[in-house]
Image 1 (cartoon, rainbow, N blue to C red):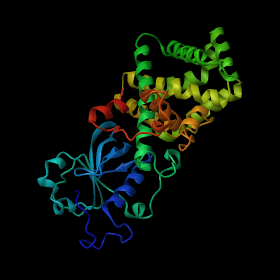
Image 2 (cartoon, rainbow, N blue to C red; image 1 turned 180 degrees about the vertical axis):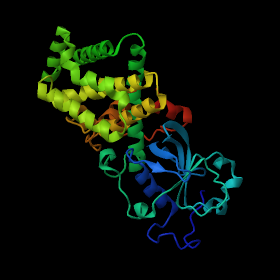
Image 3 (cartoon, rainbow, N blue to C red; image 1 turned 120 degrees about the vertical axis):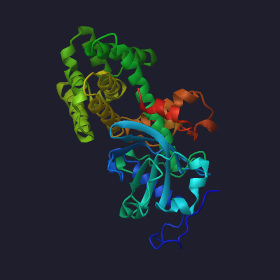
Length: 366
């Protein structure tokens, strides 16, 4: 069993957070917002791409977290304590399960010796005490639990499936990008997307307009998409990226090329993955371009859903579709477990999306 925090060991422990599990839960909620940039005690800029798997047994509290530190993606375990000195109190140093901790998250850093973790993050106490809820743009808002999966774990599983889907598309775009220029790749991916949709059902009105534009081979009609892709390596922060995404969708609606729903589908399935691949493929200031690629990923998590997927609503009625990532996560889950699941198997399974560091790397890198 994991050690429990002793509330009598320090006056800093708030009386209304009664257990270590409650502290972990609150910190996981606080860390989930991908737009927040933290500073470690060493001064490193850190953002949390994935909070990892919540470990309810002996060993580090968060397994295989994905952290972006100074532009580099790192995978490792995280441990939570009230105070950094609790490391010695809990005798973690003698336990090999705790060796090589990547991130130590504490409310108070009262150790004077060299940190045992690679990075130490001091979480503002007032942020934890006020029960900082998930950022609205990354909240699943499920009611209760699904198939014995706690709400927090379900959020992580779905988000990882969404990221897996996004980066799988980016890998494919990257492979095509080595053979053709950006415009040709975009047109090719768009045509493939239309053909797949046409194979399932009749094209809606918005996609019919796109199909006619493709027949005319008039790249100017797709200028908002192409301009976003080609300027994406210059993106300097998430806010700039999110604003550019919104403007691009609005331009498509204003020019009459397609409606918001169709523009959103093209954005998620083609434009953002291709822009990500384009950033990574560029030569030059590599660190800055890889940061731009991460801004694209983080912006993806904040795109609101324009339309509902009827079959997902029937199959997963307890899961909302407020954001595109929720829909994409459900689609990827459905593709992985099979579309013809039994009624009793339609709940999202708590499969460990973070079983190994290698698995996490496949989610978050090209």
